[in-house]
Image (cartoon, rainbow, N blue to C red; front, top):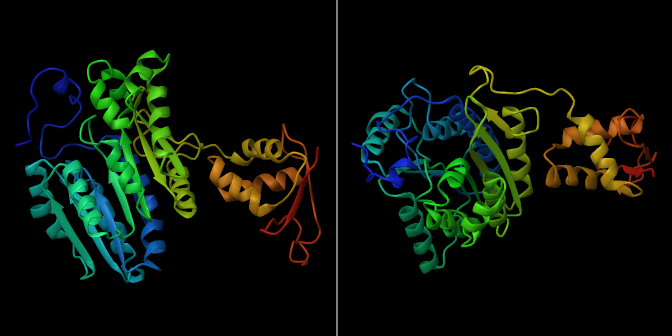
Length: 379
């Protein structure tokens, strides 16, 4: 049976955690797994081109399936890899860490045997606490002076405990390692007074509890502090908010990476789940409708690009890099915004002038903006 927690604050903070081996999936959980699936669809094939080994690391794996038959994160990851197996000619290692023995056994003995895996798929189920399992792995690598294979870690706890930030930081310091972390924003704000040491450990900042208590909006401050901690090690950090049926915040998903391509692909996955660009999902939506829709993100992006580059002459490569690295938008949105700016059809923005010849001396075709196109953002 699942481990019991002593009565009191520790029990209160995990009241939302399921007490059974398997349980029904909430709509926001399905949206979270849609985001995970969307990213892995790109991650596996891209990394497999140049790597002999890839690792998918699931830190709080669960039983693998929900009561209504929906796939949990371990089966989502395996399903994506199986769909791309013809292009995955490297060794794929799937590490599923689950502390609850009944859930681990269900995953290992019921769900995984149903998956017909090729020989290059290696699966491990570790019946341990996440922090113990990952610390042991990293300590062993450090002791032997070894590097870890490119790793995507999905770390999805229920509460505040068991996710010390120094471990996340150590993983991100490794080459080609990325994380998608569930940060329990609502619980951090709710229990910051009762459990300050857990909050400080989770965020990796001893002053975090005091800062959250003093802030007018504790949840926003907690989110800001966690992002700040991630940015000490990760070049790119993106968040996606998950809300309940009343649109009240439950938690934030934090993606962190040091690789521009990984950052771009995660943003694409986020846009598929929420096409508004707000990067959030609410259980109050129709469960069959996993996207919000705003038809013209380029109308919002155009004035931002014009304001940022106003008075400058730049290569479109710089415009695209700014949109990808510094905004929520994608390259296709920047391209559409440039088209609007060229014809003066972007409210709230000025106009651009485009050189007839590209940087390489070839002619630019009308209404196209390949990299190497020279654009003047007119004052």
